[in-house]
Length: 135
Image 1 (cartoon, rainbow, N blue to C red):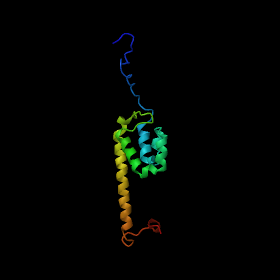
Image 2: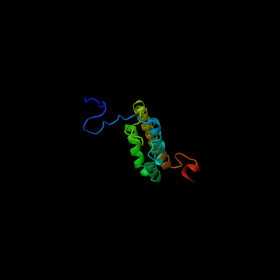
Image 3: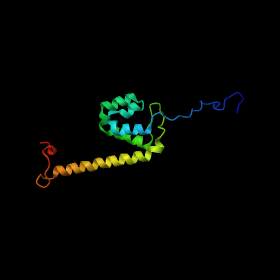
Image 4: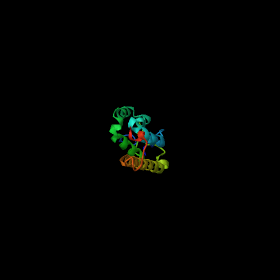
């Protein structure tokens, strides 16, 4: 070490990169915004990414594709805030987030299948109310 040179400075090269601090944004809030309101870009606005938030809002989450990609990025723990910092509480909440998201997707698929099944059944087999069929 050279006398008079601080320990954090490297001689003859670029300065050492300062360690990144954790974001002040919450993983749980980002995950919920991404899952429930991601098609409106709310997760992007929350993370401080206003420009892409507006684009996501105008395209309705990229017609669902951008919404799905952001949800997967958030669940994988690689989503960053507007300054490039990772979300701090990912490790402690990731398992619950994956389980709840998987259960929500499965429940949506089951209710869709049941609704389609009931629409295909004739009225004399299972009579339904007129409002169910849109009459």
